[in-house]
Structure formats: C-alpha cells, structure tokens
Length: 208
Image (cartoon, rainbow, N blue to C red; front, side, top):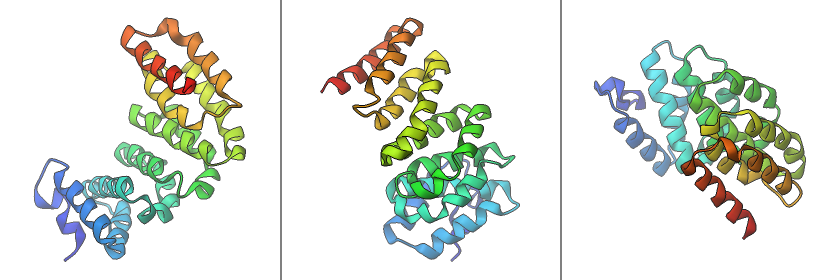
C-alpha cells in the first residue's frame, strides 16, 4: 500500500494527526522505501500532498534525523518554492538535520540567509536554529556563522529575542560569550518583563 494513501488529505482529514502517525510509523520501522516515496512526492503537482509530505518528513527528522539527512539538498531547494508551506517546512527539516548533514548545508549558507531576510516567522525561527546548530559543529563553522547570528539578534523584533537567543545559545563558546551577552544586554530595554525573564535564564545558563 502506497504511503501517499495514508496522508491526511487522502483520508479526507483537515488535521495533521494522520501525518504525524505516519511519520512515527516510518521512523520506527526505518522504512526507507516509504520515506523515499514521501520525499519524491514533495515535487508532485498536488499541493495538499506536498504539504502533507513535508510535515511527514520533518516529523521523521524530529524522531530520527539520520533517516532524512541525505535529502538535505532537496530541503534546501524547497526554500526557493512559491509554496510558503514548503519553504518553512523545508527550513524546519533542515533544523532537524543540521548536525547530521552539516557539510552539505554549510555550502548553502547564502541561500538560508537570504531566505531568512524575506521569510515567514517560522522560516526565520527555524533558520536561526539551523544556523546555531551548524555553528556548534565546529570552530570553523562558528567563525563563519556566529557574526550573522549576533547581527540578527541586534536587529530582530524584540518579541523574537528570547526564542532566537535560546537557539543561538547552542553556538555560544567561551570565545564569543561576551559578545553575545553584550548584544542581549543592549536589547534589554526593549523587552517586556516576561521576555526579559527568559533572557535572564540564558544569563544564568552561561554562568553555570
């Protein structure tokens, strides 16, 4: 039975539950043929199937990223799609596999950065997480990516600062810690009490 028949849209469902169940089933069984079918259908002409398939793909990545890491280039290509669901879904998938497929993704940093400049809220959120994970892989990656992350924190909307700082924390090292703290302290005055509370938790984490 084709895995496409088990997608939410093909079952006449408007919720994501069938897609999540299918993702967990494929991951638990390590069903490579089924996963391949999901990836192939990201380029089908049926938008509903595309949308279901990207959901299944990144849900698999959340459970077992190694099962979708070889498809990194396909997810990068999705960032150029006209279908916004595929754009932010592709970035979400990249965030799941950034550690596993860091070498491949590093060669497409410019694409990720440019998409973040024009992308939706989720695209930007997952873009920051993807870059932070890549920066955490090696000193060389960190040197290339961390200045971009700092610049982003200096200029993003105040309400994004807590979440994006939490993601960036993955890439903070002894060498760049002070720069990171300096940027956060400079932006404290723009934060609400709740936002500041989250940022102060980051300060504590770095003191530990």
